Image (cartoon, rainbow, N blue to C red; front, top):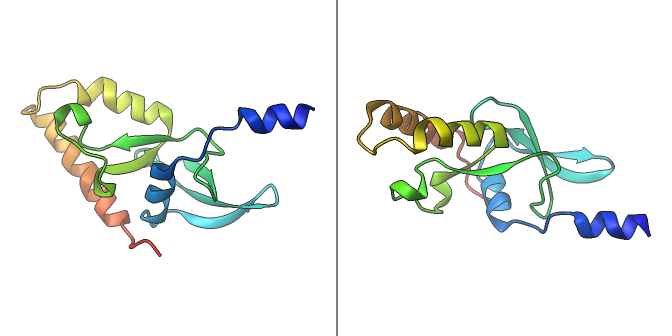
Length: 124
């Protein structure tokens, strides 16, 4: 009975997470607790992130919009990355709320877009 509750409490697969994993060269296939998974790195702090084969996070993972939706960013894969929730929240608190013409916000956004581009791999 406990097993049924635990599996129903699992997050549903997230197709955006899996799409990012497949296009981020830091993610590689590993075995985690006897099952295949993907292990990669947070866009910001390089902390290890784990995602199962269906796109369910096995460690705290959040989808990061590099150019925030509030500033015209989209769900295009080039604008999405995976981050640990603390880093994603910190960026939002420190940079996303700044005016679109703010020099520091522009600098951070450009650096993150460059990092995402450097990590890019064509999905198989």
